[in-house]
Image (cartoon, rainbow over the protein chains, first blue to last red):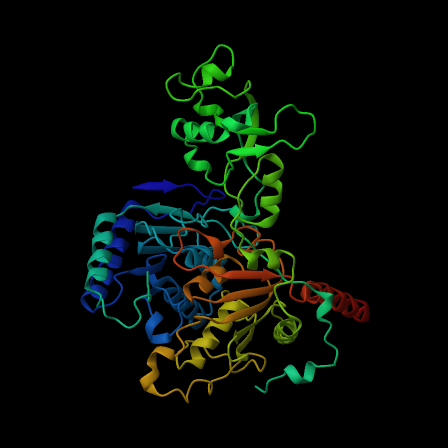
Length: 183
Length: 348
């Protein structure tokens, strides 16, 4: 497991126990998705000890290619804040994202924009990864794109990769839209 | 929406006021990288074809296929008409003194007809654009497989006057949307999605980040396109300037499912300023056809900080042009500042 320092010192940081616990939940979600023929990515946003957002890929049903699990979870977080009349920014600044696969470039930029400080992820995303695999958006110098965030990577990485491989093997080679890639 | 091209004919449409330039990859825009090589004069022209053949087998110059082996000497009275590349300096054997005999293995090349070697600099990579080719050729004759479209685009002459008139109109719509968004307290950014074959606007959006931190104009426009296809996950109905056309595809029978639109495949996006990283990558995921923007942004990801549209590891690449109504797009913020100051003056 590796940690990458990014940006200014931030006191907010999940403990080993928290990482274990929430990543277990994320993996359960990913497994559930796999069993239901969905992209096996599990993702949750945790504020304090409460899950304030969770999501899975919704690209096909919305015909919107930006509906990755993280974006769906983020909308739930915003709704959660709204329903409790809480300031979104101060909640985001103390929320951690747990996700089985490294966020893509788009999601990494979105996480910066909402100023989320920490992302814990399982395996690398070689195709689209925005936390170092394709680009390192998480720590790049982008003064007008929110704040940098820290990454804790590698938790149960092999398992996350295996699930993705199983999913892509299952996919019907005669599918009309073979280019529909989700992560 | 009605085709608006007619309205523009003969009216105020100064398409000469702007030029759309392509945003090329780093490889296409960078300076010519040079590499040192030994060249030698061919003092006896009759030996040329033998020398080239023998040198090619001893020093094949495998990664320099774009560099010509022999060049003519232009200066008059140089004493020899031709010069030949012997080998790269990095490939040369260890020599105490540089001489043609120490460069050539005794059993490989007969040095008859060759003069003493000297160092030249040759282009390390094949030129990708005409400006690179012209620079490279100043150092050593280089071959060039020209991409005519890139050459014309770099001159700012890719689009015909009727094409420019349409581009002008689309960006005007984006500008109008940007101003409508600004009136509601949003950032002054507008985006328009166009079906280029049908010459039809599919969706118009503006920045809505007052409601949602990620509702940048491009993200709004992408969701409006999804709604035009029967999907989408937000409602922007409360914003009159955020619109989509839903009747475009209903006449297509189900039998032609392959011609049904799929996310933003093949569409053109017009956006008043360069998209950020999130929006640029959203366009990759949406398989956008081409992007036209007015003015660059500080953290822009289609030219300024990144060139996501040319990123090698990604599975979709697209063309990007900047400068469409550049002045007007740039003025979006300045005008607002001016208005703000006017307001301040009045309230004092």
